Length: 92
Picture (tube, rainbow, N blue to C red):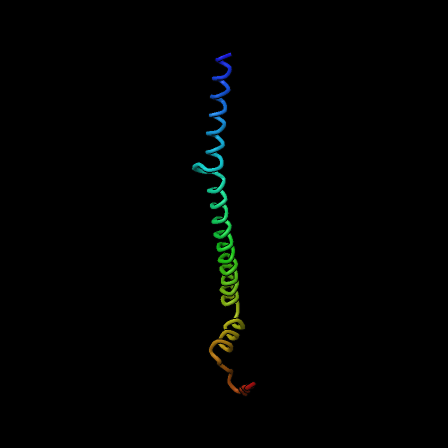
């Protein structure tokens, strides 16, 4: 009878220690949740940068491919016009 009480006490202490480590210890629930939040933030940042890189890669391919893209960039970014073209500026 005494042995059974000691065995039950040891098992209860073991379960209590495991529960403590699960909820509050190293690698516990809170720490895992914190790491998951950080991972989500980093994943969003990586996806944003991947989309930007894909757009830049498509633009590079377009610039290598033909003169229309170069001409379009020169017109919008540098304000260039072709010879014998008339430039109209609309002021609002």
